[in-house]
Image (cartoon, rainbow over all chains, first blue to last red; front, top):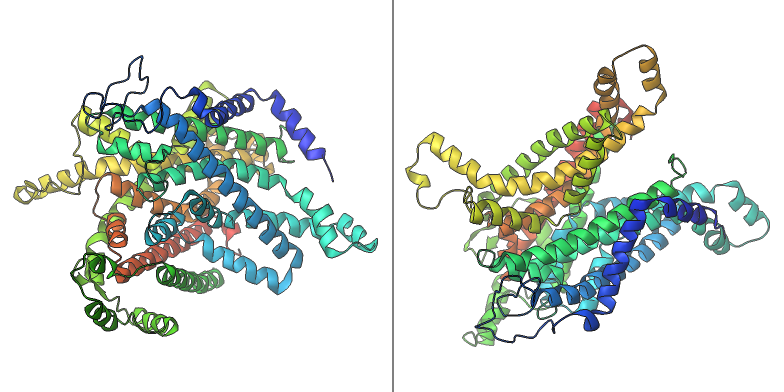
Length: 285
Length: 323
C-alpha cells in the first residue's frame, strides 16, 4: 500500500498555518464534546428556577445566558457538541463507506453495469436532500439518534461514489493493475490492495468537507423540530428554542449558531487545505 | 446541441419517475395513515375509519395504489388535499409563485454579486482584499441558512425595525395601498428572506468562480494574450471570464437541489407562504396527496433548473456541448 500521497499531504499540512489552526479548533471542540460532563458548568437539562432565572442575559454565572426554561445555554452548547459532532462523524463514516464501495464496484466493473449504476446516481443526486430527509423524518415521527445517523448516512454518499468511480476507473485500467492481474491476483485483490488505496485521496477531502455540510444539515432538521429531539441538546434545537424567544433573548440562538459556524469553517478550511495538499496538479503539493 | 437536449430531457423524465417512486414508497412504508390522528381522538369508530380508507383507496393493495396514482398524475390529476380542503393543484398554485419569486431573486442577485466578487478577487490575487474577502465568503459559505435568517431578523426587524418580521405582504394595509405602494410593500417583505439566500449562494458562486478564473489564468491562451500586450483587465473579462463562465453555470445547476432545500428552510424562518411552509404543514397533517405533489413539483423544479443550467452552460461554453 502506497503511503506517498499521505506523507506529502501531512508534510504540506504541517507547513500550512491556517490548516493547523483549523485542526486545532476541531480538536478543541472534539475535546469539549468528549469531556462535556467535566467542563460544563451546569447540567444541560437542569431547570433551577423557571420563573426567576428564565431568559437571563449573559453574565459571569451564565456566560451564554439562560433559556426560557432557565437552563444554562453554555452547558447546552457543550453537550450539544456531543450530539452534533457525533451525528456528523458517524453519518459521514457511513456515507463514505457506502459511496466508496458503490463507486469502486461501478468503476471496476465497467460496461453496462457501470452505466446503469451511475445513471441511478444521477437521478438520486437530483433529489433535494433536505426535502427527502424532511419527508422521511416527518413521516416516521420521532426517530432516535441511531436512525437519524442512518438516514443522514444513507442520503449522503451519492457524490462520493462518483468521485471514487472516476479514480477507480482510471486506475484499474492502469499498468500496475494489469501487472497485478498478470501475476495471478484475483479481481477482488487487485481492487482492494492496488486500486482502492490509490483512489482514496478524494474521499478524504470529501469526508472533511462533508462533515461541515452534515453539521449544518442536522442543525437545520433539528431547527425544524424533526432532527434531534428535546430534551437532548443539539446546536440546531437550541437555536430553535432561541428562535421562539428571539425578541426577548437573542443570546439563546446566537451562541449555538456561532458554535456551528466556527466548527464548519474549521472543517471547510481543513478540507480546502487537504485538497490543495493531495491534488497532484496543485502548485503547493 | 440538439443531441444534448434530447439526452438531458430523457434523463429528466427518468429522474422525476425515480423521485415519484421513492416518495410513494416512503409514504406507504411509514407507520400511520392520514386518519391516525382522528382515531386517537376517540371520536371516530374503526368502522368509519375503514370507510374513509376505502373512499380514498387506501385499502387497496400497494401495487394497485401505485399504478392508479401514476395514472392520475400522468393525467394531471393531483387529487384532493384533505388538510386544506381544496384541490391539491389550487393549494400548489397559491404557494408556488412565492417560492419562485424568492428563489429567482436570490439566484439572480447571487450570480451578479458572486461573479463580481470573484472578478475583483482574481484581478488582485494575493492582495489583502483578496484574502480578506475570501475569509468573509468562507464564513457565509459555512453558515446555516436558518441561523443567518434569524440573525438578520433579529437585527433588521426587531432591534432596528426596518423590515417586517414575516409574510409576503402587510396583512392589514396592503389592500388599501396604491400600485406603487403594494410593490414597495412586497419588496420590503422579500428583502430579508432573499438577502439570506443570496448571501449564502453568492458565497458559493464567488468561491467557485474565483478558483475557475485562477485555473484559466494558468492556461496557454492567457499567456498568449498577455504576450500580445493586452491589458490585464481585458484578459480577465474577455478571456478568463468567458472561459470559466460555463462551469459556474453548470455548478448552479448542480446546486439547484440545495437551493430549493435552502429556500424551504428560509421560508419557515420568515413564515413565507411558499412550498416550504406548505410542505411542513402537509407533512405534519399527513396530507398524502399534497405531500406527494409537493415532492413531485420539487423534483420537476430541480430537473428543470439543472436542464436550463446545462443549456445555458453549453451556450456560454461550446466545449460543454458534447457532454
